[in-house]
Amino acid sequence: MLFSKKAVKQPTYIQRALPVTIIGLILIVAPAGGCAFRKPLLKWHLTLEVDPTVADRDAVVLKTVKVLENRLHAWGVKNFRLTPQHAGRILLDMSAESDPERLKSLITTGGKLELMHVISPPSPAPVQTFPTKDEAIASLKSDGSIPADRRVLPYSERDDPPASAVDIPKIFKWVVVESPAIVDGSSIRNASAVLSRGDNYEIPFSLDKPGGEKVGAWTRANVNEYLSVVLNDKVKSIAFIKSQITDSGVISGSFTKAMAEDLALVLNSGALPATIKIADERIDK
Image (cartoon, rainbow, N blue to C red):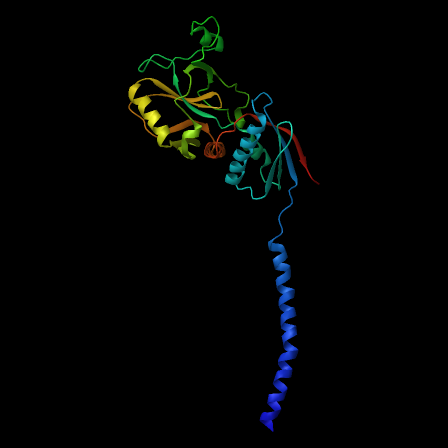
């Protein structure tokens, strides 16, 4: 009788307890699952406008979107949407960012890098610079015009002054370089930010095989000539060629850590195919 009584009662206990256990699991798991798949709202909206003077603007817009995707992923932006619009515009929707001004600068920086031969007497003579653009053009002896195989570019021996010295004007010189460039940023394989001296950073970069072969051939044939690193049509650094260089270089200057990291990110992500500007900015309340 005792065995028979247990056999009858036990199923009744299990049947009553099971629904309670299942309900308890549903109450615990469901809210957690809902939180895991909830994405932050895209509250920050930037309207970007591509330079209206470029040819085939629609194709340039699509290339710009691809470059911006690379930059935003590299920056670590997890939630964004890029939408090409009419009249050469791109709508960028993002969630809120902790440093919006830095990110806007990263988005609009051209990222155009070129290695170019400086027209100058060779080392040990100092590199030839000019105090004004007009004097640089006059040195070409071309009746005031710039030949197709030359460019006249600004050159600063230091970068923007620190915040504590914003009243110090930036000093530009001018140099004449040979066009086209020996290689451009499309040959970059990798760039990084490295502490050089004091609090200054520099950006070492390496080139892919075709780019390295071009630089190697040029430097082998031009020992003691001057080579410049040109970024966004401004000469950032100049050095004379001591011996053959193959697949690497350095962009030096008074870069802060943030400036160097951002520049390296831009170079790794690719240059914009045309200049862009922020035409409108809106943040949802």
